[in-house]
Length: 353
Ligand code: NAD
Ligand code: DAU
Image (tube, rainbow, N blue to C red):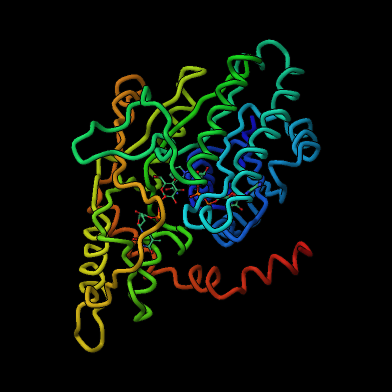
């Protein structure tokens, strides 16, 4: 048996690959374009592991993907590959449309071609699981109920609009062609191997480097945080038992204002790595210009996943954020690799691009 994962050198995909292979011996084909966000250092512990085959390819390369499907005959495809950073989507939306919309379309077409040729029993058992985000639902006011799966899509950023488009394509490929798809819409993840352009790793690393901790606007925007391993367990559960054609919201019931998240990180660092001058890290907080179109609040209602598939997160925000800060303190090699440019140089030398 084989599964094929796209975007498996990124933050969530990388955690998923490590988690999957820690729990089973099924062959895993990992297809990733290795953009700036893809880091093979995350998968270092799999060097020489015959259960993991890494292939550098773009999900938009239909021929390459079709060849891979024909060669490896996966029983499932899990699509993590995407441009994922909202700020980058504001300064350069083109890549988001290319990968998240056109890329997902091409991937769906390659999958459909492969799936059509399978024997009847394999065809019925096959799954395409699309990993998506709560941002497709738009933004919430303070007293609105959390996003349920029935909430209309109201994306507000180029990133969330491109993800919403990809979710619609996946849905259409099921309704029109019968492709056995599953979609997950998850809230903000955090944990090990998170690229330091996103709030939590950025704040940890800036704090340690004595740099400013940038808070957009008033810092009262709310996100619903989920430890990345809990997202991985939810995806495994949906893959195993989800009803074809359904979408499942994934969340940690951990709504926090950004400023509170940053202050929590500061106090953990005060405890775990106090500054030489004895000053608190919180003094490094700096208020900066807000993100254009910044969504005020996200909150996920994950009751469908709990009720129908029995999934619950294992970590609280308090336990997960402590593990995360400890991980960054203990993994300076990974950090310097992704931040120094050495990793990009290695990719160029290795792949000539
Ligand atoms: P990431 O940016 O860390 O990783 C994305 C990975 O996809 C990278 O390894 C990159 O090299 C690869 N990739 C990009 N374009 C590609 C292409 N055209 N072909 C092949 N590979 C390509 O992202 P992430 O945070 O790990 O997010 C993974 C998925 O989960 C995304 O679809 C994202 O929308 C979704 N998601 C993320 C979060 C979150 O909080 N990070 C929450 C909910 C959903
Ligand atoms: O909700 C799920 C989404 O969460 C995913 O779909 C995205 O891929 C993922 O990047 C994340 O999006 P956010 O925009 O919420 O994450 P980010 O870490 O960029 O920002 C978290 C919050 O912190 C957001 O309200 C903006 C704010 N922020 C962010 C940065 C980088 C700051 O105040 N300062 C910063 O420097």
